[in-house]
Length: 389
Image (cartoon, rainbow, N blue to C red; front, top):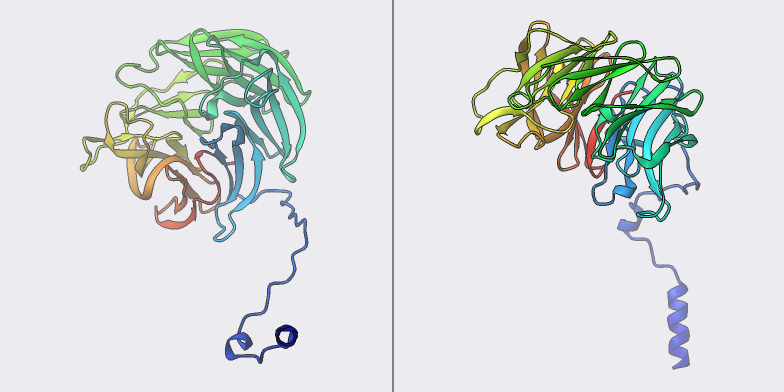
């Protein structure tokens, strides 16, 4: 028995002759140095976007995915935490990202803290925070217009809901809260004038506030009849062209609002995105981030052929390109799946970025509508809002 064991051990130690398979096996990968951290460029390329991953399966783990839409194999460049129904803003001139977030001392319960976290765009590391008072920040599935800049980007505006509605004014440079403005049954924040904001109200009006140098309300004004809540309700997220906010209604009517002055000014001549055959029962806008614009001022509207009562958040299978100056549809772009959010990059050759309901992110040529590439379901579990810096 002993001799058998020795023979087996000796046999195990002796190398086998190389076969044809082992001779042609590729060389092993080089050893990887850990940790391996790559630096981001001082200035992000125009093909990079932030995609908000709400992460419905674990709201605590919401995040922002920094994505290179040109990359074929490694589009994800980094992640920024964006917890508990967070909202985000980007200030490239200060190389900072801001996330309005909510935390609890026992993770899901306990003392509540609302704060604006300040992130470095080069390292994606936190560099400061501003604590918001009273735990009243609006917690809702992410909308872009509940966290906005004003005063040339020096201040931030944070929407509150308790369910009383108000806006907290924050000085980003001094890192402090300036004040709070009550809203009379109005919601969403649209920066207006030099230092102020406007909101859409439940009675169909738009309400505007001008802020003084201390962040307090200096004046206000209201314009009635901006939208017909019952017949043509507007999606709350507009596409911006300069200081004009272009809204689209649930039924496909486009309404412009001039936000350059202290009081929002609705533009005359609302118009339709157009009609098309094949709707079951009809084509209507649908999605979460349903309208976008490009550098030329063209509008892109996410459209669903299954438009009906209650379908406005279902997403769409086409994007219709509209010229608001000519008030005409220019083209239709067929998507590869059901899109929920769209955005257009500010590149010389702009790209249409589409976040789909299945988590896939697709890229189209914005000028021709041609499908360029898919980034797959690799950057976010639930991509819901796309931010173009």
